[in-house]
Length: 155
Image: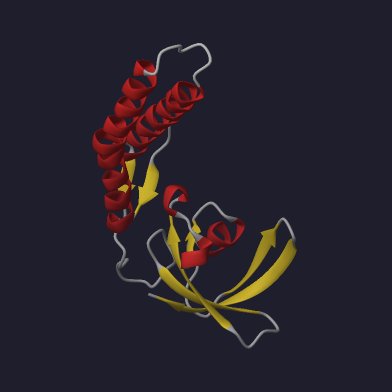
């Protein structure tokens, strides 16, 4: 597995999820399994099957989070001099032909959430913006077609 880029906030969020799954969620599932087994016949016990499936999902997610956090590269959210776009940069762009400006933060894949303005460094837009400076005009090759944006601000 390759290194994943995470902000300190993103790292903490995933660490909190891992802690919750290891403690509270595992205990909840163990209790559900125990109650289902006391119910008698396990062969046709839907609650037991549901709890076993959830247990498998939770254990898989725990392993995924452990790997992700073990290989995480924490990024500085306020990149240093040069005002060049990199993972952790906050940016403002304006699509060619539009008056609307859009604000994003470039983050690693594990932390990406476009609804919160966090775009992945591996997305078409994120990848296109990397290593550019304020004022640059960049062509973005996206699955829905190419478009051009102006990099208004890098912070």
